[in-house]
Image 1 (spheres, rainbow, N blue to C red):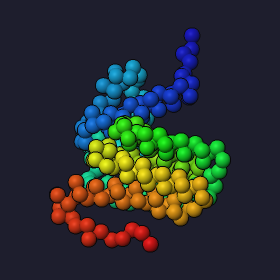
Image 2 (cartoon, rainbow, N blue to C red; image 1 turned 120 degrees about the horizontal axis):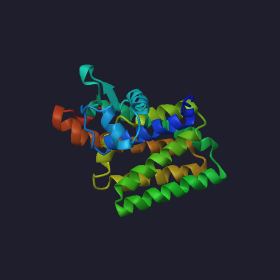
Image 3 (cartoon, helix red, strand yellow; image 1 turned 30 degrees about the vertical axis):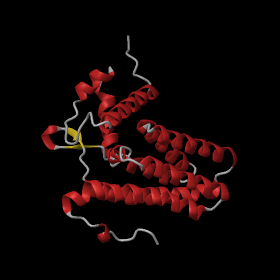
Image 4 (tube, rainbow, N blue to C red; image 1 turned 180 degrees about the vertical axis):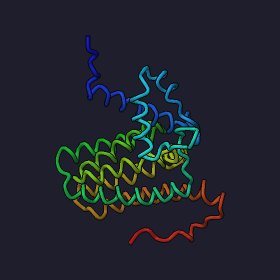
Length: 236
């Protein structure tokens, strides 16, 4: 009797499951920078064959979370603070543009949904719920990018968000960070309600500035003598 091949949809579900698992392990620092990833061990943890795991690793390599390392195979990518700073700059302006575009189009139920997410973000900040804050912020940013009606921009946002995510996990441990970001998104939401796309973009760029300032203060300046005054202005 002929064996039937697993449906394409089933295989994609396994790949997605492996991507989510590996992403979570990397961002939680259970898989550390430069640590080798064993397809066999991951397959054992997830109860699946190596094929979907191999595909998941290819996707994560594309997104900058893992990389090939010669004879060692696939390892967790190590991103320097300086590289993270560059990513914050580019990613921040991309989502700033998405915010501006979405503000021109978002109305009605979509606007109410965004306001609910912003309220949830504020609640997470007040409860000091770091995990909830990160999840809600990611959901909110994805929502805004999707409603910019630029699929390419939304894809770039997803790809660029991952590599520097480990630093975001650190940021939420800094006192006052979650409150400041929640305040900025309340400003974004207010600007959306008024249809002020420029104000919405400015508020989102402030989120970028907060993150980059923390990178400089905690990671870059102590190691290299990098001075804030050396930073060129990123705003027109």
